[in-house]
Image 1: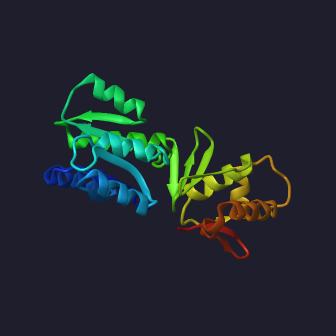
Image 2: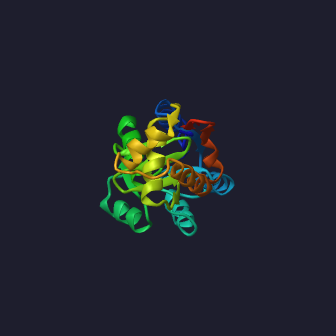
Amino acid sequence: MDKLKILVVDDETRMRILVKDFLVKAGFDVIEAEDGCKALDLFYEDKDIALIVLDVMMPKMDGWEVCKEIRESSKVPIIMLTARGDERDELQGFQLGVDEYISKPFSPKILVARIEAILRRSRKLPGEDCVEAGGIIIDKTAHEVRSDGELIELSYKEFELLTYFVENKGIALSREKILNNVWNYDYFGDARTIDTHVKKLRSKLGEKGDMIKTIWGMGYKFEC
């Protein structure tokens, strides 16, 4: 899976380094900003930011102002950090559309866990009932497929076929084997029906459809 990018905004260099180190170890890409103005510049420049960790008290522009401006154009998840434990701050944060609120001092491991939980809820990270390959996330519980975060509308059999391919990534699959596992032994039609479904599936996946490789005279293999 491509690494998701997190923007960490805090005027304390030590805090940014601490949070960045834990996020990098967890498999994320991290970019940093030391004040609110820089944070907004980075946010508007980079369309791949998956989540923002935003400190409240900062010079030039505080976290509330940054959050308010971002919310005018984006629903990107935001976690606010604050040194205060004031309930009014939390209420203000949630009214502005903050997804999570963490008071300093905090455990970096807990912060990473909260980030992962939010990204799973927003379908950017696979959960326990999800399979993922090459930027395609299949949520078997919700019966949803997302490609680089975008929802892909699939028929029931297209969904089952893609799930079977992804779960058997790198394995050459004969048409007969695909029929037996996706259509279950009760299908007596021509095995070439798979070719029709694969063609539609490739079309709906766009460029990622190329990950479904044809093995001439045999079947298919999913590679990414």
